[in-house]
Image (cartoon, rainbow, N blue to C red; front, side, top):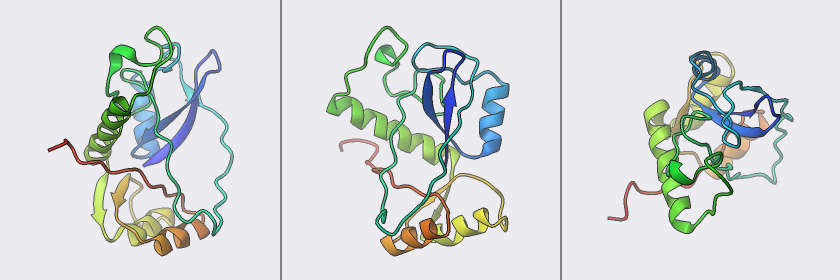
Length: 165
């Protein structure tokens, strides 16, 4: 997965998650992106600070975006009270769980599961030896640290089961 800072014509800045740069371009071309704050459909990439990894950042928690319907490349878990639908959103534990499950489904549908080969495949993609695409899988703390030391942006997301049962 790749994260971009995006902004609308009203300069609202928010995160968007995509399987690849091409996925972002395709969604933008088709008019599928919109601001989760005001609903504006004119979206561009906002300037981003470079990711500088250090050994202290052994495992980083990835911020979870809160998009509205059809925005930012991640489906919304409960669009009725999403940002841009009339006010602030209260993030209850149940809503957070729903959002994390929605994020999991999105990752599973748009990225390739590479299992324990995650670190090796991330390097191949980073160095142009494999097709650029979204991947997910398993990696040890040491492998994540080594990837970050090489300037390869990786993140960890809580991987909740699909249901409570």
